[in-house]
Image 1: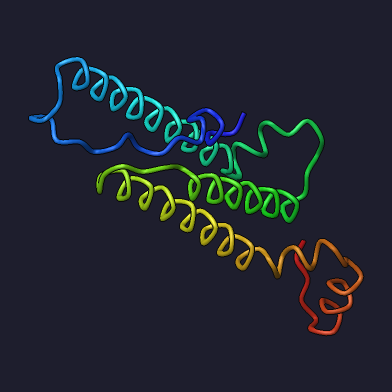
Image 2: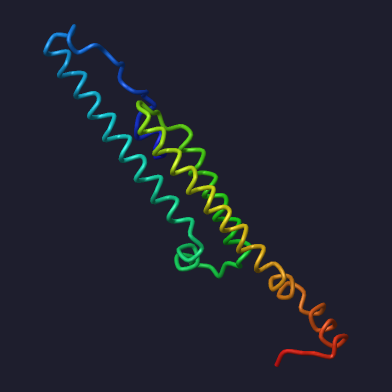
Length: 147
C-alpha cells in the first residue's frame, strides 16, 4: 500500500475550542489527533525508507541482474519522483508537518541533484564504455594510450 492509503486519505481532525466541548468530545478529539500524528509519523518514516532505497549503493547491492550505471541512475530518479509524488499527497495539520514534508522534499531534490552530478562526472567514461571503437581511434590519433 502507498503511504496515502495507510493514512486512509483523511485530512487533519477539525480544530475545535476545547473549553466549549464536553469531556467525551475532548477525549475523542485528542484520540483523533493522536491517531493522525501516529499515521503521519508512520507515513513519513515509510517515505524516508523509500528515499533511502534510491541510493545507488543500495540499488547496486540489491540488484539481482547486472544493471548498468545509467539504468541505476534512471531507476533511482524514478523512485525519487515516486517518493515526491507520495509526499505531496500526505495531509498536514500544523506548520511542523509542513516543514517536515518540506525537508523530505528537499532531500529528494538533493538526491536527484547528486544523481545528476554522478551522471555528469561519469558521462565521458560511460560514452567510452558504450563505444570502445571511438576511444581506440582517439588514442591512436593522440599518440597516447592507457595501459
